[in-house]
Image 1 (cartoon, rainbow, N blue to C red):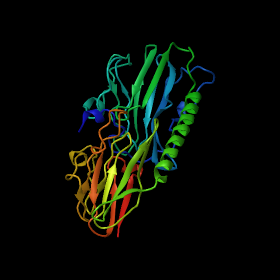
Image 2: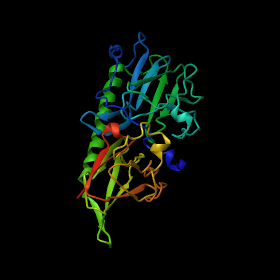
Image 3: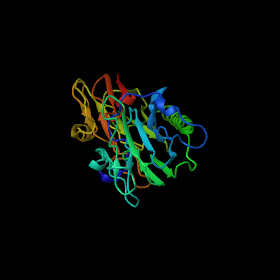
Image 4: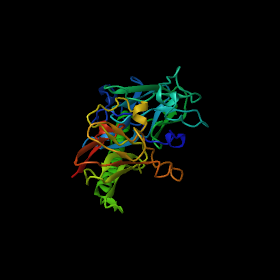
Length: 339
């Protein structure tokens, strides 16, 4: 897998079931008023991403809220509800975030104490099971601490730590701003999905009389990902080809299960690698997989389209269901109808 795109991909692992609201423990809502935080419970909560409650195909790739100000001695809790996975990764100043393929990105790197900005600290990819995950970090010293999601480029946050009582935000203010940002970023993603699914199907006639159809694999905005294929269904005829093209900022697969079981772990070699060289001729029984197709990122240095594409040939009439192994929990699936 190309490290040039692996460092920039916007999704790299399997998602979980959708969480509908920003989950803030009841205890955290009992915050003091004004511009200072209570000393009775020295913690606040930030949401790591969210899927649209009305459409799981749309995911906000953002920390909610993106920036907070807390007093020295406070603990920040990050809540991971899924289904899209994320990391909370603090990298020392002057260093680059780890590659999503490296243990530094995928495995937890817990802190040895209050964070001071001099070491790599990471939640690892979460949630890692059917239950929501959480990650906590305390800050003893004033300063500005930036962090990122190691698997979603552009997903970044900031924790401003100030002396106690020096212009900190109340929990109500943090929760309200998180909800405002969530609504804004999800609206951005909803508009992008509408643009994606509204596009006219793209095709070209071949000299042998067959047709080549093109399927877009998702779409991206600065703060959201559209996890859907378009068009779906594709109306094809025997002998036609269907080309899957990834122009989004996250990796995807085009996987036809047939009568087989798809790989349970999208990080496995079976999931990452294609089952053969493109183009592959489908049948209704076997599993066919494009492998991970890299994203159209970073701007100006993305892999060429031929690397981000994979072609399947439709042999006979029938219905062929396909999924993205990375984003099937967000409903990223489609159908090719051949007749």
